[in-house]
Image (cartoon, rainbow, N blue to C red):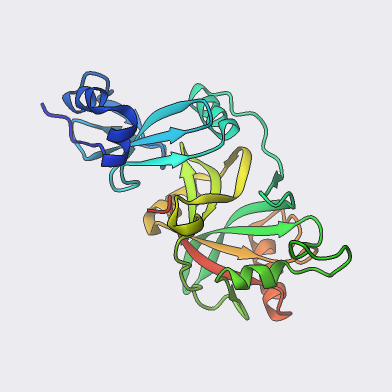
Length: 260
């Protein structure tokens, strides 16, 4: 039976026509697989399947996903991210931790489900561990975290009564069932780059992952240091978000999964 496999032009160009043709012929493709996005089983002989090529600095890993979860595409990640993804396949995930953004500011990222408009929605909450200065500013110039995000297109959130607007060009990379990065548009129309990236893949709950795959959207909330904190329960996280919004210390956007 022919494989119901999608190989995008970008992936074909990267792996070569010969390898792409072998994949389409079924020579190098497992009939069954675990979707690299939702981590549930898939069958390349029974349902449309995407080839997803993760490319690091020195290594490339070919993975498979339900076409309804991810399109066939190339995802550029750091070598450390890629090795973490490989460890997640082999069952050696390692510990998660707070992660450094490209600006070297340390950001804490928390996942949770937030009730908005009567529906539990997957959310990520980003809070730095210290004040974020504007690049090039003098030391002690104040916390510009929210201002910088508003300039990037994030919307000030006065409440959590409605879903925040979408932010074009930004996305959330959920791969191999774990959170790997928050991506922002590349310069001059180039490929997306990581605004935040996990040193180790960040584990999310099955309910969170199910909700994200259902809506194909993740809500991103961001607040200055000291606004949210590490909340042990989702109801406490919601209370902290409500308080931050009331005090004008919250911005938000709705981001699609995996960018394209």
